[in-house]
Length: 158
Image (cartoon, rainbow, N blue to C red; front, side, top):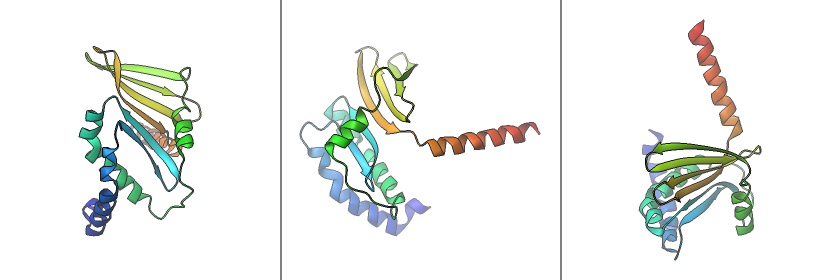
């Protein structure tokens, strides 16, 4: 219901108009985004067309997330150097997992003890990555979900 609010739509549309043309940056194949000065994620695609095809949906989700954080404390804007440090926080030798999603695609994760994680999908036939997503795990949310799951499991067996 909240997403259908007229004021929210007006805010979303205004932000969309400011950001929609970022896709037109030559050679852009991804984006980093920060909300209130905190880096939330970096998404990279292996080609411009895939990125362009997804841009409207990506932008809408980022805008909704930004609006949900409205009113929180704002810190300084992030620099390119800080975004690169964010991307490089996960190292090749950190904990890796891999799962074959189907006969054409692998899904891999690499994460470190600080809560940084990279998700990547790979085309098995072409042996190259399709999409990489860099983010920080929200440890508070994970702990809260684990507590809820434990409570639900306990209630089932009582």
